[in-house]
Amino acid sequence: MKYRLNYRLVVLLIVLLGVAAREVALELRPSFLRPGLHLYAYVGNAGDGTVTAVDLVKLAPVATISVGADPTGIRAHPTRKEIWGLSTTGGYVWVLDATTNWVVARIPVGGSPYALDFSPDGSRAYVAASGSNAVVAIDCATRAVIGRARAGRRPWIARVSPDGRLLLVSNRDDATVSVLDAASLEPHGTIAVVADPEQIAILPDSSKAFVTSGSRDQISVVDLKRDALLANLAVGGPPDSLVLKPDGGELYIPSSQAHGLLVVNTQTNEVGDFLLLGMAPSAATLTADDSILYVLDPAAGHVVPVAINTRQVAHPISVGQDPRNCQMTPGDDILVVVDSASDELAIVRAKTSGLITLIPTGSRPRDLAIKVF
Image 1 (cartoon, rainbow, N blue to C red):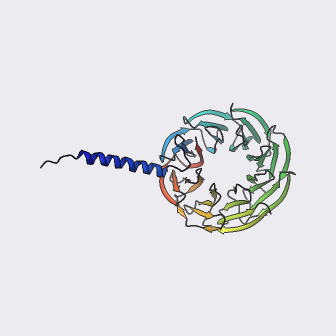
Image 2 (image 1 turned 90 degrees about the vertical axis):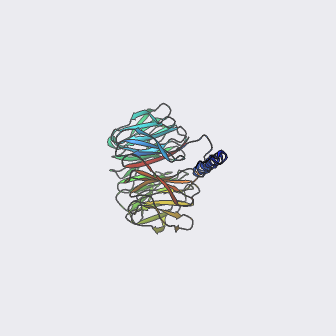
Image 3 (image 1 turned 45 degrees about the vertical axis):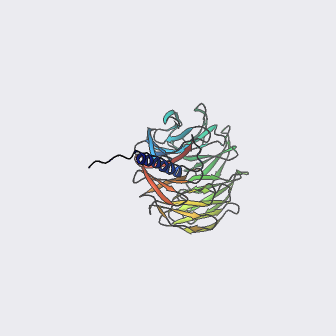
């Protein structure tokens, strides 16, 4: 028995498949992303010294780039099509061209750097070299070191004030914060703070800074107008990370030992609320509209959405065995979560809190940056 091929039906099926594929692509494409723009995640893999570039529209890895041992401090440059990061073991800054996925520079800065920060205009990068008790300024255009200054003992991070005038450096072994002129690196003063200071958050008006302790359940509040300590606040558990609301009104502090989220009123310098969230919440990211804070709980393997205005805690979203880092894409379309145990990225549709897919990375992923270019 012979069957005749219905060419009209075949053509119709091909057209329908094409339309369906286009609709799926449009559904996955973030709403803010215009045609011709790329949306990539860059994942630092501690296990093999690489960075995995992931296309967040096609939901697939596109490149694996060798950057050096122990990559950390990965940041998307605010104005250039570049990703910057550090090799803590190698003692240098590396610069990745986002358009080619090639490392275009390695800049020696000194022993054991952990984090970097950019000036508000993107012209400079600043790095604290923990092993050499120094802070370094880099010209981002020439990629040359243009300044070096003495910090305290074992400087942890350097942070630039939003007005671009000051550079703050947390000195872990001194229990101090160094305040320097961001342009000249000349010292303004040294402020005694909590023991083992690590992370720093600075208010948008550059008036105050908040500094975490790496060993105690305290944060320091520093007056940057007078270079003076205002208060040491007890927060109920050692702070794991800091997330500052863009308007500067509240500071959100996940604490794994307190099993929850602490909320600090930055105007009154008081702990205003505490939300019990799970086993060991340790990191968080805030949506661009300031409505939802996604809090990671590595021990439970999920992320918890928290409505900031109402303090309501939504149902947890499973994202892997050991989630360690997370970021929102611009426009709040996608939540990207690094799972260090399974060597994957979890991609979550933020508006529906649904897991879209898991994308393979390198060995032991840790740091994360997202770039639109």
